[in-house]
Image 1 (cartoon, rainbow, N blue to C red):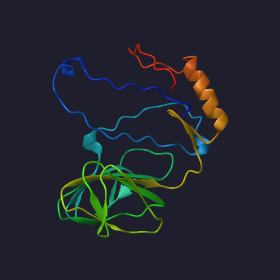
Image 2: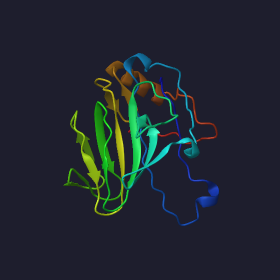
Image 3: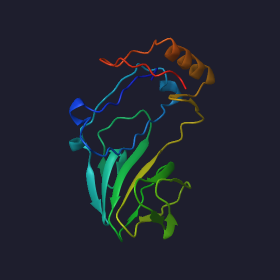
Length: 190
């Protein structure tokens, strides 16, 4: 919508504890007609996310519909976001979507037998229905959906209109975004 501020912090009780944090964060643009909606946030607990076991893979349907399951996460346009835990030696037929890309979080994978590197995004061609495979356990995400058209992006601001990006930058500098409750740090534009 018109913009939302968020903060990611380590809880006080974990700051001195050795640990590893690993995550993948996805932000999706809105259709142009919805870009000025009131900002909002909805949390969906992990327990509500559908899980499918298929062909040696565990697939969490984070957003959209795949393998006969539908995520409860609401969207403003058709979107697909899958978290795929592929076991060594397994292969999985990927579901269709108008636009799709794969990202290997931790290990290489294959598409129709062709090797793909870890931690690199691979864009699939429209109409392709490749098989995802892996020689070792691999975590892969699939993202996709219907095209939204051209977007401009500067830092954390995304819009179909360049002048809206400039306005967002001015609003950020002037601290006109609603702050995160309890947050005291301000991060200036780069």
